Length: 356
Ligand SMILES: NC(=O)c1ccc[n+]([C@@H]2O[C@H](COP(=O)([O-])OP(=O)(O)OC[C@H]3O[C@@H](n4cnc5c(N)ncnc54)[C@H](OP(=O)(O)O)[C@@H]3O)[C@@H](O)[C@H]2O)c1
Image (cartoon, rainbow, N blue to C red; front, side, top):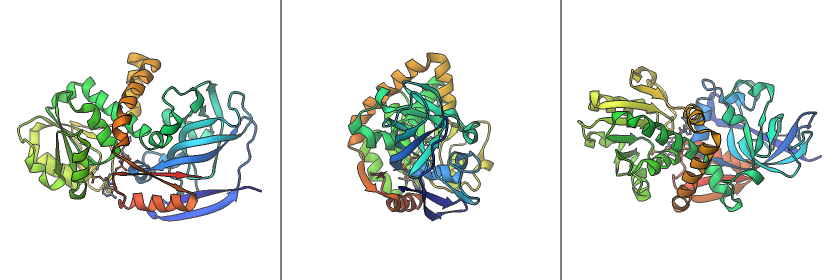
């Protein structure tokens, strides 16, 4: 019998992992069986684990008590199906477990793809439950699979963030300061924001300044220790991907009333201690699906898809030069990559892909 596998992480210690072998799951009536083929791992996946309880990321792919299956973005192949329109051999892109296989219950099947209507996913945000059939995806190109796996969900956030800011007159800011400027989500947003009006400033760790500068999408790059070099009398919006309370507190004290907006986007620094206490009337938690919903109402899904595809295709030529794709193979490699990314040891230039 062909075997499958799962990689679980301990919810209270993300460096504790359990790799298990198990039988390939059965595909029952109304179900399809996906074989996980190619996934990416970035700080975003670590954030899914850090926020696993509060944002229900652990609920997508249930694990044993105390353990979690960290959601990953990637490609899978349909290897069994009891559902019309979801054919064996089809390739899909979507939210996948760190596992050899995933059983889905396809619903709303159309030529573009389907939703997983499994009971345990019913209350979770719909963008995470949708699987796109590559054969009908206008933005899909086989030789861009690695870039799609690494960037598409992140660039979607970058796009929605840049759009939300422009949609709101940049909240009156003349300066946009992004933390974790070396992260894919931050520099994707900077790529879209540069030249639209406000000055775009990247904040990063000392070791990542040269990388962030080399991208050319920030007007200025500063280390977290050099916040005092920001203009203290310019209306500034802070786009926080690091989630570092110490940095944010220092920025609040330095800018005072000139800090006109704080968008809380990520927690790459993994420590949320003290962050909640800093929230005030100008703080907003940014969640890409919310702006997505607004734009679907404003523009319609098709126009949104067209605009996003245009932005994505304009980003691809640049990002090709910004990332060194490192592809590895097998469940053990996934565990090693997870441990490296979760510990913050990976270089921002490296894009980690694992195939199975
Ligand atoms: N709200 C939303 O809808 C949404 C959607 C997508 C992504 N996000 C968030 O955006 C953030 C960026 O994700 P990404 O996948 O784009 O990241 P990435 O490309 O993997 O970013 C790597 C960078 O994150 C920082 N970092 C990573 N691990 C660290 C650690 N252990 N300690 C300190 N710094 C660490 C470093 O940046 P610096 O040295 O520059 O700080 C590093 O260069 C994540 O928190 C993600 O969850 C939010």
